[in-house]
Image (tube, rainbow over all chains, first blue to last red; front, side, top):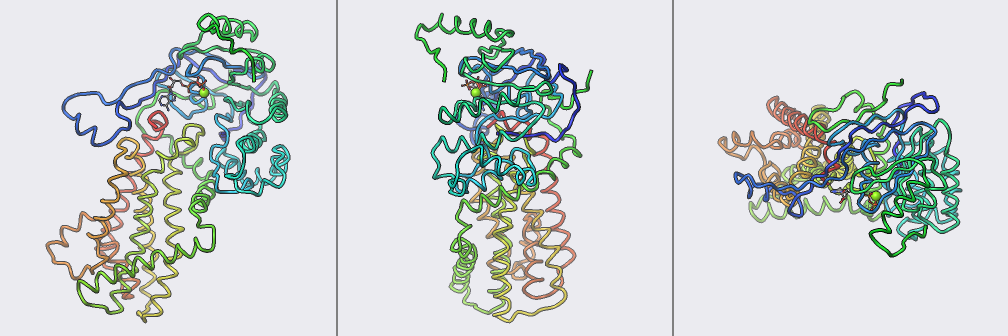
Length: 268
Length: 275
Ligand SMILES: Nc1ncnc2c1ncn2[C@@H]1O[C@H](COP(=O)(O)OP(=O)(O)OP(=O)(O)O)[C@@H](O)[C@H]1O
Ligand SMILES: [Mg+2]
């Protein structure tokens, strides 16, 4: 969900917002299901490796400027979420360097920090605090959040009684009130019903401004083409193309169709 | 050109910039409180019966252990029951902190992979939860103290520093074990044996004075032995603790806290890729 670093940094339009240089990232997963003391002791002295590395990103270079709306596309497992995690400081890079010039708010997954046993109201606070907002911020914005979510009375019901769409609505509403310098949204738009989807898309469009940088990760190519002014395409952890949305998306489409004739182009 | 606000570079084991870290942590204190409250609520402690259970559970436990002592030793004086409840309740502050802490990081996967915040908040909330559970037992003990007519004196104010040492010990253990469990997941399944051993090796079911000198000198390696002994002296017998007892527990608490925090803080940026 969102997390707001507490830096407040003045910046001019078109100045650099995020700079990613020669970025490489590997995850360490163990060969057994879980790293255990037992497994470690058993392989002790035999020099056997007990971990396996997954290459999620290699040699990625991206600059994002203020005023830009950058779309990130690519197939499942391409490393999109991993890239977002590095930019927001959740995962340290294995190689390379990432520089961030401003406060970052990330919406990587909806409803992180929510506790289903609590009411929607409690979760607005819980999720907001998890995102780095202060209690006063949330107090001030509570009505706006509740309105945006359109949950009505249900806001005082426990969240375990919510439908998944209602859950997503509240989660997006909490995230939507933050106004950071750099906003990263990972596949959070394709939730809710058609009406809410449009509403959240409009909210994203509202957030576009010359002194803010937006990074959107999505499989909804039409949305990306509609909202973004620049697109990067990741494939298996490497940067395949970047530039004009319609061109990159067209390249990506041909690439996908070349491998798989079934058309999966239609957007959600 | 602007200077970067934040730079992320490859992970190296080492402490993060401490001032920034502590500032961020302090800024997140309301989240720690709210997070702990919601965890407690999830386990139904929000209801009247849930809170009643918080009181009833330790009471029943001490009843069971009292029965055990009675069967084995045949003694049933009031002091013994007072000692048992007082030390057992304090022991549970630390044990709950350990059991809550062990999975604090590994079960917070979703939070850790999607939000950036000082990770040490998670084991801290485990200790806060243990503290929430401890407070009602303190009230129960005050009632027991009154009912069985244990003595009072000004020396009982020693309870405050001893309690703080216990809290520091619990916090240190929670931080240390949550970090260890990231690298060795079977630690969480070995933990019940560890807490059980601590329970039996500490002066809870017996009194420190009844232990032979040889064993007592071995108990130096038990961080809880003199802590619980001091606690019992102060809150049950209304005497001052021994200087040795205080120092022993303080040094253990500080050591565990410092070692645990050092390991945790120097590794925490590595957690996300290992979950
Ligand atoms: N926590 C993790 N531990 C180990 N490997 C991981 C972890 N998270 C991701 N990976 C691996 O890293 C690679 C990139 O994953 P990532 O989540 O960045 O893909 P993605 O582009 O976001 O895909 P999707 O479109 O499905 O969201 C995948 O091969 C995945 O298996
Ligand atoms: Mg993803």
